[in-house]
Image (tube, rainbow, N blue to C red; front, top):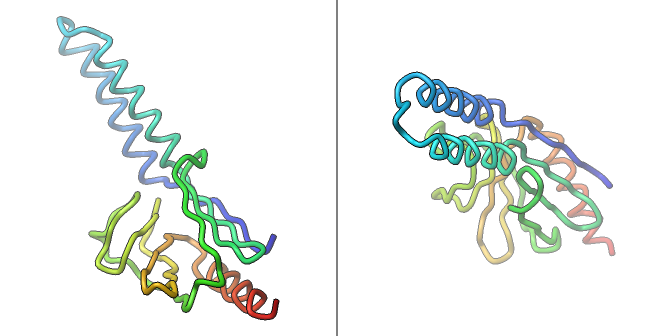
Length: 150
């Protein structure tokens, strides 16, 4: 394996925790008439969102680039033979976090503005948010070169 890194989405997890805390406080203090199961369902949904979107793992190995959120239910995989270009980019703040369709193509991001963008032979682009853009770009480039030699 050439590269593997998991980035924790502190802002996403903090926002979900604050929302869950507010739901709990409001359900205890204000709305005693409302059924408790509604609050439990909402908090449960927020916990599931934290598990699914709280981290982003990127792996580069053996001619493959893989990235996935949380447990891996939401993932993308690319053959590096199909990658024409890779570059470090800075996302505008309004691109946000999570899974987004941007003017430059799809994006996976859990935190920050730094990303690595790959351009595929099809012309499609994909951005991967990372707190280690230089390392990720170098790993992708190295594997692209290794794939060309085979």
